[in-house]
Image (cartoon, rainbow, N blue to C red; front, side, top):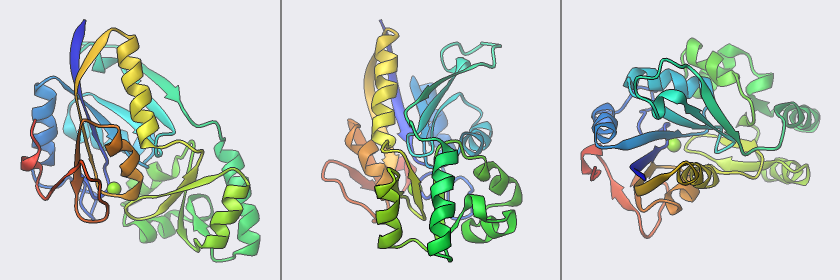
Length: 246
Ligand SMILES: [Mg+2]
């Protein structure tokens, strides 16, 4: 049996700052964890294409759980370091189509005219709402399972979404809506995947900062919280990545 460790991390306001750059020592910490037999798992509300953009900057193999636990992408090079195969296994947890979610949102827009989300926003507007660069805004718009509401979210909008089987999750900045899956469910699914493939998981570290990270942190043996937006009794609250015990 092969032994591995898993390190799940959120991106926005966790390893990335408000300008979407890596925070000080975040890259070194993840590279150090990788060298100590950790598989690094991005766990964010971002799209696959956005997560890939940040993984390239790290220069190590990454597993991607995308759009708040809607799907998991497992590249071949995570298992075989010298693999020339560019393939990616994919596990999908969401059973809602993006077309359905958008159809409901456009229907709600007729009632709540100030409602703004990716599909009814121009790239310019997305850049203004999110602070993303033009390139990243394009990657963020390539959504497969969820939508993000930038403006006009209210209790009534929430009720209407839920009555149509669409569920909201608050991230560090916006509300993302989709199927009733979450980062914790995706983490557990990935852990089962490793166990079913003959691995023993020794340690699980999770790092997050927003309400949508709670389910992830609860599923971890070693949960870490950055900042003061959330609390979890078992979790260690840290300011710098150097405080993470790798
Ligand atoms: Mg966050």
